[in-house]
Image (cartoon, rainbow, N blue to C red; front, side):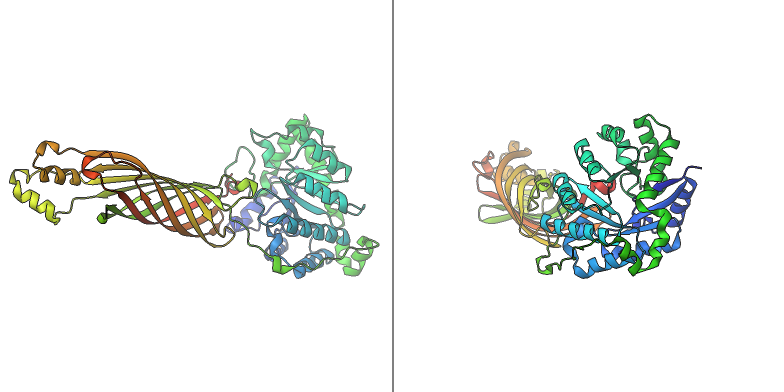
Length: 497
């Protein structure tokens, strides 16, 4: 039986709430002897520790992820240090930097990252480090904090061989997860070049599920697939990789020396404390900011009440529905207030049998009593730029400016006009296509879910045809007043795949 260690697995999250016993059972059957469970914020400390109390395989790391760096204060840092000192945690993590979403300002991420690296050094525990698109700053901070007492692991390593070399020079370790099994992986060279005593394996469950289970929830038992892929890339046997990574993890996390933690605060501090410990800084909680929501790409539906205005009067009001798509093209660059909306709306306006002109026409032309008159169809295609005033808030306000393409197909109107002109031959389905400017104001409610951000949205949009209209009977100015409500889903692709 192989003896594997999953060095990074978030199995305390809600996605494991219903079958955690079965998940642990499958991990045991796969030969997983230890599962290191890192936390990302203080509210997760207790659930993770409770899981460790239930299952002997589980070990806990306590720390604050860069996504939550803006949410914590000095008391939270003291709690991390207390748990590490008392032996309830075997590592400080998951900590680090994340510039992909930048939910917290970079300066705050840097500060909290340094604070937790210093806690790791004072407690003698290793640091489990998260790095996403922040190679230069992350390695610079580690270099500045490395005084010979820092042990660290770059988890889910996805950086270049140059970053790997810098990490190795600083005495660090790396770990690989299911992304090395993907067809588009560019990590084969890194996997081959990392020294045999400096890498480990992990799942990062429930994310980054390895092939062939990609798209499903990840779990610790799949860590053997990561080991198998490493063996394939390095041209070694899976038994060799298993023995190698397990020995590296036992040494890094000091799993054979956990009894040392029971000596208490005084004993551990005497062993681990540097000569001149760096104090945990007080954090200015007045600078807190809410994170921008992950709204890179969204898709949804909407319902609209459209009032069609011709000249100075309202022709008709009817309801319709459509599709609403949106993208934030500059979000990867940290610009969260700009979105591009693409919206299609279809509205059908049926002939009103009580309309006075309709009744008069039918009365004057009894021979037309049996004619089936088609309704008016109005289709609009909007493309607009949405400017959000407060993208970091749960309730956001916005204004937008764009163009509307009108596709108007007149049925009942064409009939009435032709009959009023006493020329039955003019009764045709009249169609016009035209462009015009549109403006809108709206409000959005942002709700975080396990699958991404769900955003119920309400807006009022006004658009008008620009220029000469092609239909002789419709030369007056034509515009649409359109209140609408919709719901959009912005998937979190890192959690879906």
